Image 1 (cartoon, each protein chain N blue to C red):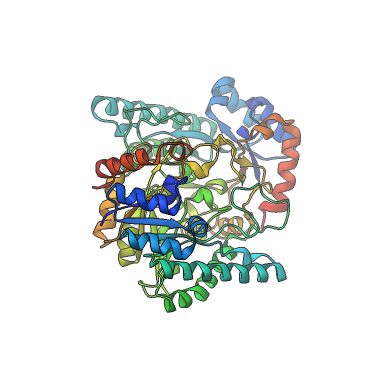
Image 2: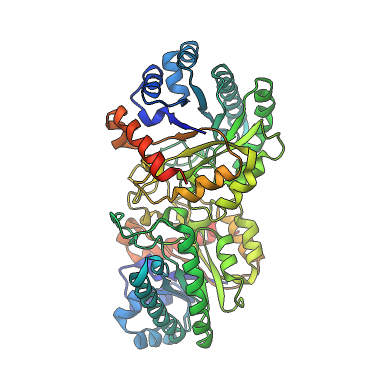
Length: 288
Length: 288
C-alpha cells in the first residue's frame, strides 16, 4: 500500500505537472480527474503516467445517475444521457488502467450540485432516486466488465444528499454492490464522508474485498460556507484516522491511499509544499 | 395526534406569549425550552400551560453528556457537572409533566457547539465519546424513572457530530435504548436530522413504541453559512414528509407532532403568521 495524490488536491496542476510532482516526491500512484485528463488529452495523459511508472489509483468521476427520476420524456432523456456519459468515463478508465472509476451517484432528480433548489422541476422522492441508481448500475456494470474496469460506489456525507449523492452510507453502498462480482463493483471509503457513521468499522470489515479505494482527508469544523470545501489536510480537523485505517487494512485492502482535499487554502498554497505536508501527515496521523 | 408548537419556532415569544399563541391558533400542545422556562420561572410556566389546558409535548433539552471523555480530573468534573445539570432538567420535565425530556447528547469532548476547534484540549476519540453517552444514560435513566420522566434520545444530522451530537442515526439511538424500558428511554424522530438515512423507514418501524417525539421541519438546500439555521418551514426544502409521517404513524406513535424551526427568516417574521403557515403546511405536506 502506498500514498497516492488525488490530483484535485493540487488543483492548479495539469496532469503533466501532477505526474512530475508525484515523481519528485517519490509517490507511486495518482488519482486523476476526467476534467484534467480532457484538458491534456486522454492519449497524452496515458503516455505521461506510463512514462513516469505511476499507478492510476482512481479516475474521478462518473455517476450523476438519478436524473432519470424526473417524470416522462425529460427523465428518459436525462437517464440515457447519463448512461452515455458514464460509458465514456468507463472507456477512459480502461485506457488509463485506473484501479477504479469513482461514481458519485447524484442527488435528488432536478437538484443541481451546489445550486439553489429550483422552484419546481425537482422531486423529493428520495427512495425513487435510490432505485434509479440501482437501475443505472445494472446497465453500467456489464459495460465496465467487458472493458476490465471496476466501478467504485462512493457514499457521500449526508450533507450532500440533496444535490450530489443519495448514496449516504457505506452499508447502503455495499447493498448496491451485492448483485455484482467484487472485482466489478466496489466501494470507496472516504474518511470525510463516513467518519461519523456508527456502523463504519463494522461495515468496513463487511466490505472486505469490495473496498476499491481508500481516500483520506480531514473533516473541518466548523465547515466553510461552501460545504464542498470542508475537506482539510489530515490532522486539521476532527477525524481520528487510526481506527479507520486499521479497519481498512484489516479488511484486506492492499491498494493505494489517496489524499483528496477540496480546500481554498490548500489550493492557494504551493503544490510542492502541499505534497510535503501531505506526506508528513500521512505518516503522522493516517497510518495506524 | 395533533400539531404542537415547539416554542423555539417562535423564538421571540416568552412562554406566556407562546401559550397564548397556541390557544389563539387552536393548538393543544407546546414544546418548551428550558431557557424560556427559566426566564418565566418554572412554577409560573407550569401554571400557564395548565391554565391553557396545553399538553407539553417535550422539554428541550438535556444532554451534552460527552465531556467526561476529557482526560483525568477535567473529565471527571465535567461528567459530574453534566449529570447534575441533567438531573435539574429531569426535575423540570417532571414539574411540567412533559411527554419527554429531549437529550442532545453532545459532540467530541472539548469541542464547543458552534465554536472553532480548540488548538488542543479536545479528543478525536469518537467511539469513546459514544461510550460516555451510554454511561451517562445509565446514571440518568433511574433518576428519570423515579420522577416519571421519559428521556428521548435525539439523533442529530451527522453535520453536528463534531460539536453537538455523536448520536447520528436512529439505529444508533435504538441500540442505546435497549437496556431500558420503553416508557423510560425513547427516541426523537426529527425529519431534519434523519431524512437522508437509507435505513430510516425500517428503523422507524423497529422503533415502535420507543418513539417519544416526532419533530418536523424541512431541510433547506443549500444550507445557510450557520448550519444550525438550515431548518426550514415544511415545504421549503427537500424533504418528502409523506413516507416518514406514514412510517411514524404505522409504528404506533400517537403523540403530538412538533414543529421546530431554527431559521433567521422565520424568527424575524410575525409569530402569528408563522403559526398560520405552519398549520397550513402541516395539513398540506406533513400529513400523509
